[in-house]
Length: 366
Ligand code: ATP
Image 1 (cartoon, protein in one colour):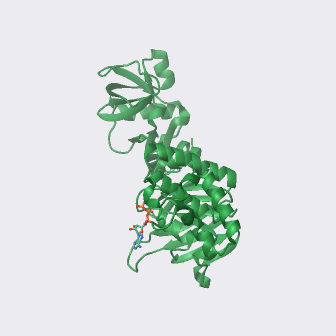
Image 2 (cartoon, rainbow, N blue to C red):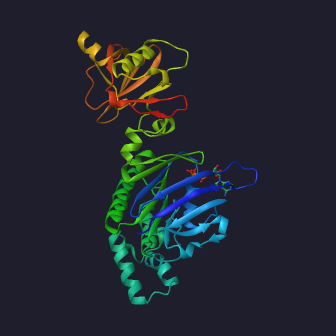
Image 3 (tube, rainbow, N blue to C red):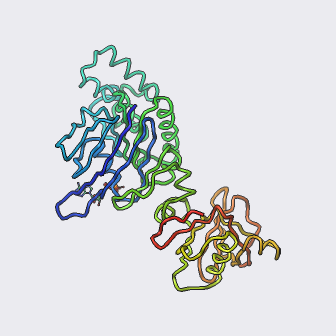
């Protein structure tokens, strides 16, 4: 399996257009499952297409297993067919007039693989992906999820050393997405392939990736394990982009000094943090604790106080909305909250769950 290195990649689509990719350097280790994660337009697909060879970078180098396959300065550009990479897009584009078997066999036939070997490979891949029983049907006779499997099978039959996937699960319903997610994890574990997976869905990235690369406006924001990205976001963008429910942010220099700001100040004192550098603080809803506390506990936890505005059941957990001095603060409870709307409640946070950012919105390590 192959490692990929992107070196100072820049991509502009027109002379006067802002760069789609500004200056991207990144290493994708052999057998890594890397998710490129970011909002629409941040440059994920462009990056994937440059790795695949469907797009020329404006500047920079791409290396596979240490050997350059693209080097703009040297005029080197390896064509897609010579890269041994498999690519599956969101709209899987099967050949409608060919049977499923012929679709899966297509690339091998082009490569002039001997018929017996080709048929054995096709049978094996179709069995692995659970589509063998549809071998003689046409794509139009399959559901979206089944077609998605055929697209994956067609790519896997070519035994690529790198698998490139662009939002391959976005056309599927929730149940199929879950099934295909498991399938992809299994393929990755069994074949040990290097996978680059583009998604704007942070849940998908969190549950699939060994490494996540978060992008925004053509720039890399952070590369790390799902835990790194979630627990130690490098900046405000990552903190706010990742998380099922948005992180609560308190701006310390917004000119207000009310009960919420006073609570953050008390937390900083309790946690012995120099407040001068702290421009904003973030607390994930699931990290916010709430309930009645004794005077001693209020002091020990530097707790604040707010009013319960709403309790929303979400099936197995509850979103609790608090009003703190006119600010909306959200908490998640995994057990039925023992509070009612209109009630005053204390809230507090553990030291390691308080995310602090400086004026440049960069993380301050506690
Ligand atoms: P999405 O999730 O919506 O697919 P993305 O993160 O994959 O978005 P890209 O498709 O890589 O983003 O686009 C990055 C930027 O480059 C965007 O501003 C987009 O408008 C621009 N862009 C992409 N392809 C082209 C093109 N063929 N011509 C001109 N501009 C383009």
